[in-house]
Length: 132
Image 1 (cartoon, one colour):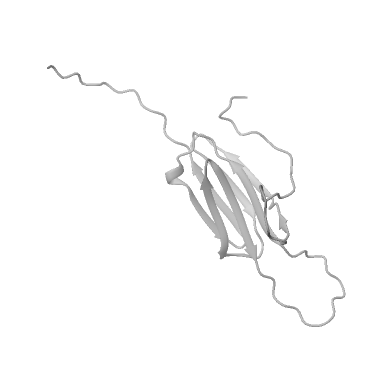
Image 2: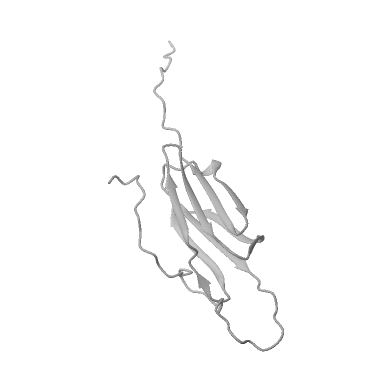
């Protein structure tokens, strides 16, 4: 496997990385990653996250997906609670072969789709030599 290929990694718990002063709970969203000759596509499940609660950033070749969700306030006594409250956080290292200026993302029905187009390789060309 070359350095430019994606590597399948084991599922990990969310870790904000570095120090944090937040006492909030973060979960690693489930993702699917697909690679073609032209692009890499990341699909992440972020149920309950609105576009306003989504922060998608790229810094130092690290793609960070952070989703904040607000659960509606419930009235009455809790009889059963299986749905944990918290937010989402996942980070990926982006290969140098990705054209970072053409990254696109969309969020619909709690599913984030990030399209990471690969940069076109430099094409051979003839260089004109001027006299003088």
